[in-house]
Image 1 (cartoon, helix red, strand yellow):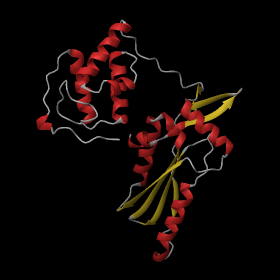
Image 2 (cartoon, helix red, strand yellow):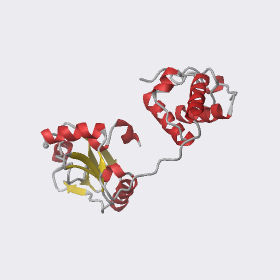
Image 3 (cartoon, one colour):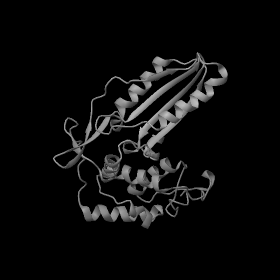
Image 4 (cartoon, helix red, strand yellow):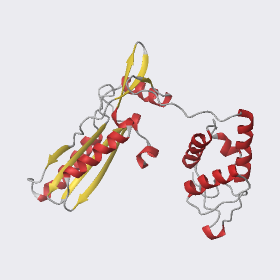
Amino acid sequence: ARFPSAATDSEVKTEFGSELQSLIGQIWCEQLQVKQVNADDHFFLLGGNSIAATQVVARLRQSLGLELNLRLLFEAPTLGAFTAAVAQLQQDAGPAQGSITPLSRSEAMPQSLAQNRLWITWQLDPQSSAYNIPGALRLRGELDEDALRASFQQLIERHESLRTRFFEHDGVALQQVDAAAAFNLQRIDISDLPVAEREARALQIREEEAHTEFDLEQGPLLWVTLVRLDDEDHQLLVTLHHIIADGWSMNV
């Protein structure tokens, strides 16, 4: 849950007491979208929530090469206390560790615990749409379908999860990131229907798309359909399986 903001931008003052506190304070400002913070400011009373806390910790892990637990920010939620806790961890851990080397995508990788739960659930009922994440957007005006298709192509190339499949080999649950293939935009044209019938048909298609049956082993797990009602009225339907997306990643 998000707490009410504790102060306005004009009320928040800062005097960073150390280089580390300056770094952490800058990250807080960027994540919380405030101009300045001081040592006594409380992360969650400034508007922070669990998602913002996760992002702060992830950025500090990358910047400091230090293994930080998310719980630390909940236990020491003021800037001064959190900085002191991080400094103590640095002292205990010794020299900063090197950056994490990415694994090769040419070979399959183990599923995460969250992915594995959804993988097992899907195996029990492959036809279920309970874990689908559907979305719909009404597009009015002239539409450049080539630009729309290219946008999704770039999205798939950028985000590996959108081209990941899930399977099992020798009793081990795995995931495989595939190379980006040409994006397939499904297109349904209902402009030839009488005007009075188009909305009902568009709603029916939206319901059908929301219940798309995904094959986690074969993919793709992103399904996009463009419904044309007339030259300047379209419905864009996007459906993903929860194993590759959640509320946070949808915002990304």
